[in-house]
Length: 255
Image 1 (cartoon, rainbow, N blue to C red):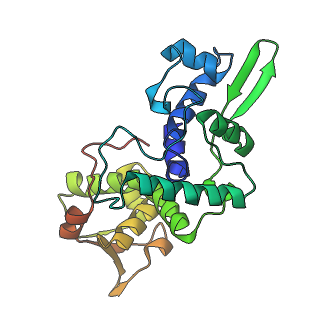
Image 2 (image 1 turned 120 degrees about the vertical axis):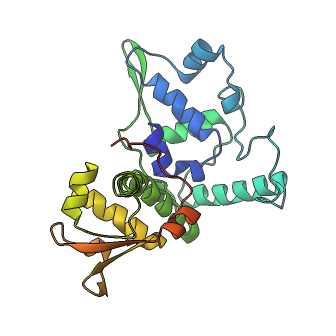
């Protein structure tokens, strides 16, 4: 569920208690549990969990009150930043016709409305469940253009990141960082254990980031339109890659 949560983008829309609430509902969704979220909170944490601000009636916030404030990231200060986030959040929900939650319990009810969770009363008690894939914020709320672009970028990075790491590991570990290699999507797919479409995505990300170029003949080619069997020259800019790409996997990447 964690991967789906980060990919969905809700972390950048909802108050900070949203992720711990998602974890709590995910635990409640296990087959061996029946009951309310209050019951689960009592069973696991004796009724109080600091990550959600105490209990389900704790007030929602966008920052951690007890952490040191980063004035470089938010020079206006915690209170002003919090007020701004609430204003934006409230306007977004109001425009979509949803109530603005004030407590974790309020937010849990919105989860049910939005389809981020389901709750059913059965003869054995209350049963919770979560969808295999979460609905996206933009499917339910009117996001502004800047936030939409940021969430699209996050989802693209989450999708392509492991693919890029796998390809780079192959180029580094097996080919010793070649400046240029004549290859094809099929060959790279066979060498990395990915399929051709995955390799195409990884190459597209490298090209868009300025870490590589692909050429056919003397002309620069469009990585997104490469045919699986056609050969091309992959030209790497290792200096740019190491300077700008912050994370490279040290070993094999999980599929």
